[in-house]
Length: 380
Ligand SMILES: C[S@@+](CC[C@H](N)C(=O)[O-])C[C@H]1O[C@@H](n2cnc3c(N)ncnc32)[C@H](O)[C@@H]1O
Image (tube, rainbow, N blue to C red):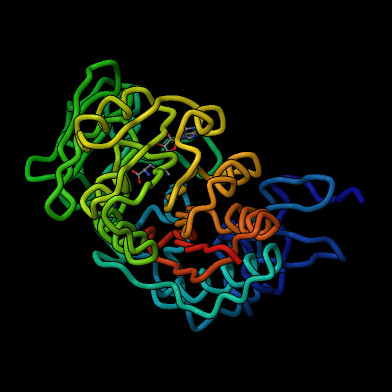
């Protein structure tokens, strides 16, 4: 069915329904679905249409006539324009409830799994949690962030980015080239560096371990994420000395380090070659291979007791899951930044004989719709 509304059009008096994946709320206009940002269930709002496709439209709230009791004044003056935080208008505790609803809906619908937990609060929250930032500079060298689904630059407000670690919330003037980018990494001495082939690395500490990470390489964004996720994985896997463990999509070896500390013999695979080189230095006792997990898995031992999967948003996929299941591990820990991908992969895992023992959800992206889940799977 084609939709006869157009981008830029204001639709008035829209009743807002349930939250959907991606931080949108579902509304209907003349029988058509509109996914609305910056709304809340039960509200009566006016929206401006931002995108129209054959099956649905997207829109953003421009006026609220009947506000939800969970609506708050956003802590950041550029909320709504900056693409970074889409739940700034939601009271923090209620934002976790919304994420719980999304996780429960997706895992139920896609995998038939009954998620009964809560989305757990993680400190620091809801402000000052982001350890890494990528700022964009305008032609006068002023720092800002990109708008939602756009190249538009939204300049930082006075006081800087509210979700960034306070040490990197306000980039120093003249830190980068006009029209360029600036990477910021929190630490005792905050770093602000233009991206490029500098080879600069930083040291991150997790418990007793240190990890060297490329300045522009992957590291968990929330200050507490490495500890929270490592604890969840190790508690779920309960590794014992001598067990064979795989860390797939291993980055610089975060989970490999924890598995090695528990006495496991660890194999890791990661697509970013620089991260693999760093992982070898970070976890010297483990074996690391660089390349696509699906291709390199065949080179790992044919037996594994434990497997950690921490794929990008698209998920691990059926080929990787089949290769993992063929090792007959006694436990799999699946770390997921997208509950929809997790739901699809849990369904596939069940077909391969693996079912969830537990799923925990962690609020590692406060004031945004994002949520991180850790599923522990065992043979049925
Ligand atoms: C969510 S990150 C997890 C990294 C690491 N486990 C950590 O917590 O620091 C996903 C990682 O998968 C890597 N990656 C993405 N697609 C890949 C693929 N097809 N094969 C191998 N690695 C891949 C990325 O480079 C990234 O380091």
